[in-house]
Amino acid sequence: MTDALPIDAAALVHEMAVRARAVTTELARAPTAQKAAALIGAARALRADAPAILAANADDVARARAAGLSAALLDRLLLDERRIEGVARALEDVAALPDPVGAVIDAVERPNGLRLARVRVPLGVVGIIYESRPNVTADAGALALMAGNAVILRGGSEARASNRAIHDCLVAGLEAAGLPADAIQLVPVTDRAAVGAMLRAQGLIDVIIPRGGKGLVARVQEEARVPVLAHLDGINHLYIDATADPAKALALAVNAKLRRTGVCGAAETLLIDRAFADPAPILAALADAGCELRGTPEIRTIEPRAIAASDEDWDTEYLEAILAVGFVDGVDGATAHIAAHGSHHTDAIVTEDEAIAEHFLAAVDSAIVMWNASTQFADGGEFGLGAEIGISTGRLHARGPVALEGLTTYKWLVRGTGQIRP
Image (tube, rainbow, N blue to C red):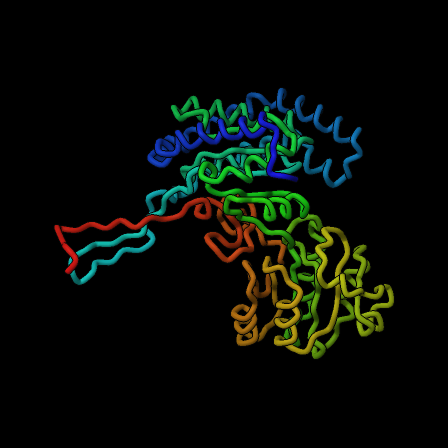
């Protein structure tokens, strides 16, 4: 894509960003109760408008089926009464979370009497680009608002009618609470030029958060002239140490891979210490559950249903019932493999040796590192953060599940009594 954009898309995004920027000061100073009231009002509107939302979603699903979308994508797109209620409850949950805006991170008094404090403030204008899931419209809008930000949402074309219907409810909540409708805006067009315009809106949009497939995230990271919070791949590892409890290791391996194969927290590689006593039951349980194992010759000797792993398998995010499996020599072998092939998303160790666990937790440079827990817990809700906008694998600003705190930055407040610098 070149820098030349259709003037209508560029002008549209520019106008929306200007309107969003104009309300940032009001949102940054909005009381917690007012922001919460907007979300509770939006939840009320969702429940009241459920028939209209379901009708809009039925249109989206019909178009998606005609376009040949996969069953997995159709499932992400589909809304029913239970899912709408879940979206409404998620709004209420965010409304009940502690407000990060104004929270004091730390404070100190200097020897000269100056009192310094770091205080959380909103990011400003957040642009969120996402695919398939219409619930993201509500989740992202709610989190951005509660953190005091204005947000511009650009959903996927496959969910355009559903997104509009849900956005209408968010606007109803804002207006009922006396907050500006421009706090949560939805890009009304679905052509790719609008995405390009958002990525180039430096000075108007403060951060872009992509939530979708690898193609979308790669494009955003490559083209953006605005800071990006994102992860490209979730090549997550589960390492079974020699001291692991066999029953615990089996349960964790099956859950980490197969609970939901299409989520970014799913394990994609299983590493087993050569000194682990009996890996055969774990490999058999995975194969029995329908998981295709791609393993080294050693693995295939133990589990004949495994097929040969290629070099590419160690660097692949499958997002389906496929798992790369290999042996390593102890925790150092595991951490070396993860350093060479991981994506800095989520990695876990199964061990009963606390010293080995602490070594792994310190040595693995990922956004989330776990001990004796399934990688499927890589989720903002499971971390007690409420809904999440995504998981960041970068090293700047926010890392791991991005929720309310991740949608703020900080400023320094300095209070003096007339001090001058000598």
